[in-house]
Image 1 (tube, rainbow over the protein chains, first blue to last red):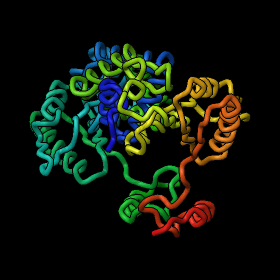
Image 2: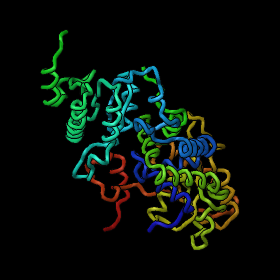
Image 3: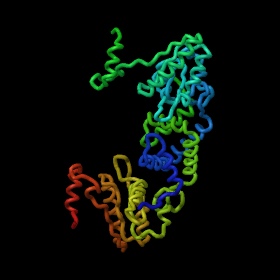
Image 4: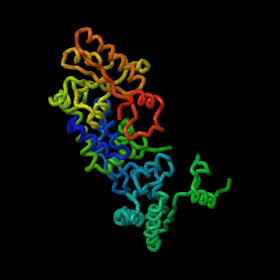
Length: 206
Length: 206
């Protein structure tokens, strides 16, 4: 039977670290020990970074991005094309598109996908605020950059239906989605049939 | 080209989280986002736990364990057999033996293994303090619970040599090592030849 070896503070540290995605109980213990050993060089600066995040980071009231300023850096960047709105499921998707330098536009974070089995309905996502943003005018294209999963596609259809009401109100908004196809650097042999079929159907002139 | 999406505080948080063992750049970003989203339920308590660890956790001056008390919980536990000293490479090994409830003894953390290539010599490990502890008397057995690696075994030999001096001074200390053999639940077919040969040589009566 295991006994009490270390103080409650250490046990609590391990337990909380284990709640981070990617860290199980064993790696949480390893991370805790690493932090304790590197008190000055890692634990202290990380504590300060946590403190700073607690104090300064918030969710942007316009797009749902997380940032230290309100509105967020993306929303206050005047050089971006404000007429294109990229709809993403999560902040991580926004970051991924920005890392790729994929588009110079503004974003709208839904905060998830429709998933009746998990009890996530339209009211739980930032869909009403998206429609409201579009209703205020100035937006000519909405890019649905949701994941190519069943839930993502269901959400895309629902959002498209909601935006269709705006057309009746006189707003001319084009709704687009990301292209399907062969990933850059990908090998055909390893691709699933659906992707291959889509890539063939959407083939372009060489 | 990627642009600046989030504040410097978030970038710094991601960078520091990436220094934890087990977290790469991608998982550090995921962890940072997770923390920011769960500000109240995870980031705040984890910051407090870090703060507590910074303020209270230290290295035990006797055995090298990390704990919130000095001497550590293990060293101040009077119910343990003080005549047996288990020598381990790292605090994580001490914790592992305690989790297993392997022995009711005291420990001595070396803080690493001899590794000339990495520039780790005897002076970098807590070997002199181990000899000193043994010289003070009351210890009848030293268990070398080091890893079964080349460095671990080299270290074990070096420590044994150092402890041999004590015999000349009149201290009767038995030096033992962990048994080699088939791991509990292990399948013979998957074991290396060295382990199998050792397990056969050290076979016991059924």
